[in-house]
Structure formats: C-alpha cells, structure tokens
Length: 171
Ligand SMILES: [Zn+2]
Image 1 (cartoon, rainbow, N blue to C red):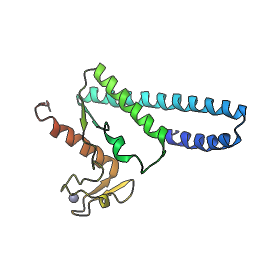
Image 2: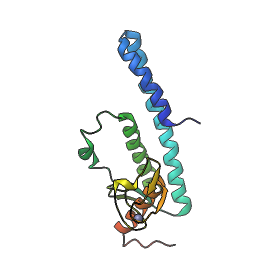
Image 3: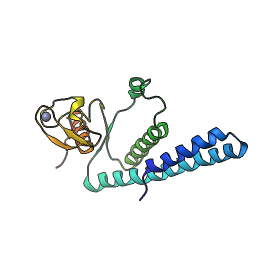
Image 4: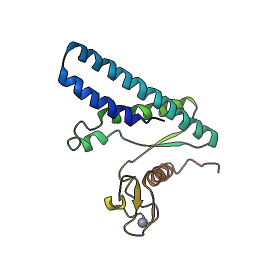
C-alpha cells in the first residue's frame, strides 16, 4: 500500500532536480508530474470521502469537521510553503466530504479547530505539552493518555455535539 505523502515526497525531490536543470524537456516533465500528483490526490480523496460518508450513512451519524475557514490568517508566516500540496489536498478532501454528505442528507457540523489536539478529554486541561509526540497524547495534569489522532477526533465529535444542542439524536 502506498500513502499519499510518500508519492508527493518522491515527486518533490524529483521536481527539485528538474527545476535546477531548467531545460525544455525538464519543464515538460515538471508539468506532467504536477498533473499526475493532483490526479492521484483526487482519486485518494474520492476514496476516503466515500468511505467516511458511507460509514456515517450506515451508522446514522453526522460528520464533524474542523472549521478551517479562518485558519489561514493564523498560520501564515510561520510555515512558509511547507507541504502546500498536502494542505491543498486536505481542503479538497473536506470539500468532497461536504458535497457527498449533502447529497445524501447527512448533517455536517463545523467546529472550532483550536486546540483539538491539545485538550484533555478527561479533565479539560489544555496544553501543548499534552502532545508528547506527533502520535501520542498524555495529559500533564491527570495522566490521561492515548493515540493523539483518536483523541483529537473525539474532541472534534464532542464539540460538534455541544454546538448543536437542539438536535436530538436517536441513540
Ligand atoms: Zn487530563
């Protein structure tokens, strides 16, 4: 199995070489490469969004996403250029999810994205230090620990429920 990032990493290295070369054939190759990358990312995004929306439909649940509308202004200068395509393809994934969910009448909630990966679901303590590594979460206040992505996803789901208190869900 290949992951979306691996391909892009390989392509980025190759692209660097081609850009240095600067010949006509190198430019043509560069263009090909970016087309192939975006087609690959789109296929993957269609596949992921379908599986998420299908699961929501099968289980009768809604979908919660981080509301990233205003995030650009907050992260500008700090990470110049880093993984531009990466963030682009996440934007596309969100768009595909929203579109497919809407088509099927599945509710999509947008939640405040601040600290979703830093907040302890057990005691509420919020700190950068709770996130020991990219992969693991361990609350510095109460010791609650787990897989960082799972905890962030739980926080997002909980915020979605809090932000829609009037929607009664059949259990
Ligand atoms: Zn805690």
